[in-house]
Length: 262
Length: 370
Image (cartoon, rainbow over all chains, first blue to last red; front, side, top):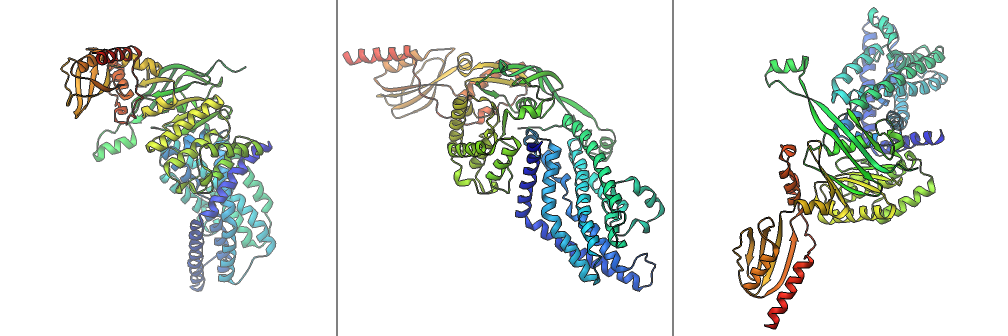
């Protein structure tokens, strides 16, 4: 058991080392984050000043967006790595190791997440705080941070599922594009799901998306940790279901793998 | 108890389904999208052979022969459609992870190294993955990096290494856990002559030292001759030849190359079956078709024209032998692209058969006496 854990820890360490060396990607995300928060804070302020109905005050909306964007930007898009490995054929080397391939990919993703999420979280809090001149209670931030990391991990696992489709499709670009848009809509990326039309509110609870985006961010909106435990359980439930689906998908994918040439 | 054979294949078969486009028009493309047409390509066709422990086997064939597919099935990466494979007593498709502990793989066109990181990082990771204890792992890294002369590059990111250095790192990575069996898929592809020779010598030494069984695919006949003792040739997924390299030469060697340094300028020999390759100054090179004449006749004819200062008799390059093998099985090798012909053949060690040498010596003595 210990040696098994140390295998995955080794994957985590090596991708953490890689992420630390490839800082360009992180800096790009930080800049994007700052721009997005600036644009949307201006938008919400303009909407409020125009007297348009807005369920929440602008500063709360900026903090909500800061948290959802932090989660989205922190989760590494592992599906592209898997797609490239299948296309290039490097999957052949990866599958030849005495380790769960899915577990290895997930651990690598965690390494990248650990390198990336803290810096983006500080960026999110600093930007949202500077823009709004307001900070949520620290006890809320202390709960949102680990729940957000758990949500990132679940998003990563879902991306692995999309990536596994590359074993059949070769190119998962279109599927991931649709999946990402569904996540943005049903997860309430830009604004809370309560503000969306009825059918979105009706369908969203049957998807994992609100648990990974809207619900962690809503803790900041409500300014309390009520519902944090239920969110934690909800994330665990989705994680268990995702693990089952990934196990099934990988077994089928391994049988369907085609790697031509050398 | 160890299984009697390292590798055992019994009618192993694998096919791939590939798309067959209807055409280039928009309607054809729409139809392809809605209802794609496919065809099955048989990559490996009821292939059977076995390899004993400690053997070094070259596994060759033209492009698309099914070599890499077979190796991937033997490593448990691809699953066969039918037939059975046993590697070190395990069924690869069902016991991939157990097998991986005893198996090393090098795929020359793929990489198991983290491109942006130094090789040492990958080696450390592999130590954990293969559950090697710290002291053994450190000792193994020291020993292999010393053997493969990699110490200066251990902290250099892989992307900054030359192809030869990277390939040596790939081989070290596959040997770290002390595998009993090593699959090498074109390990010298793209390397210069010197790097090839280094890798060939190192692989042979590693196999000699630890008794590692080697199964090697390559289009370079130098790899086969320098590393392996036995050759398995496949084409169209089917077995074409299985035996020693010497036996392959004996059976399919159709010509020899004779180079003569004589005291006669521009030596010409008008013997059926003898073709002049080059003749300049006092050196002449001939291709001797063994089914038409013998090397002895050529030597006799040369001696009749003047004294022979020196003589070299070489086998035809192994490339030519393999081409002859393909040509002898046109039904199987149909459509095969024997790109082996394109590879550069290093000089074959000069060999003079004892009977020819004795004859030559006798004639030389006669001439001296006269």
